[in-house]
Image 1 (cartoon, rainbow, N blue to C red):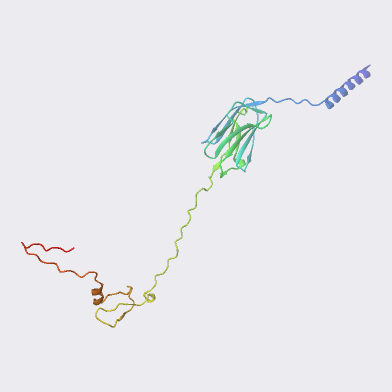
Image 2: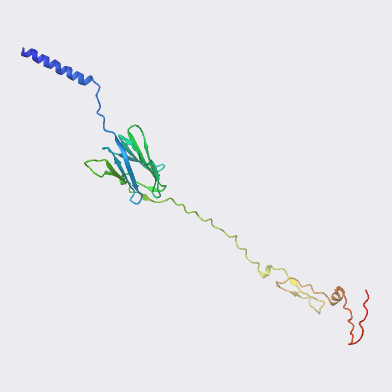
Length: 224
């Protein structure tokens, strides 16, 4: 009787083992969190997020263009602002529902921003209930060189002035001599002086005699 009872118990154990082994495993669904709020402080460059349930965010870095990506697993996108622009190292923050279970936050960085992955800090505000997280990237902002180089204005090479030895010889005839004597190294052009006969012939009109009328005498009649 005792032996039969042991056999029955053994068969029950084998049946239970087979049932557990061949039955598809039933996964325990984790509670889906929701992104309730987020806020960014440009001065401290800190991003704070608030979730409705416990979740552990994960981040990574992309370089072209430079940005930080923060994924929230098992999290739905709540009624929050999905995009906002800033001035500084972090120029824009975008939030979207990547898939059914992941909410993604993207921090777009300015060109010229220097960032190392080991400098990024992500930690919960409370270890006991990690529903609020703070992302501190510790960004060093060095904007790209946007100074325009001023084109150099080069002047044409200066030409050396010709010396007196290169000037042509200029001769000026004397006033009362028929034999002109050359004047060497004169910078003035040759003077063209007319002769007295040329002055007499070149005068346009010879001056007329002006009659002298005494007081009380009649005026002479003019001929037209």
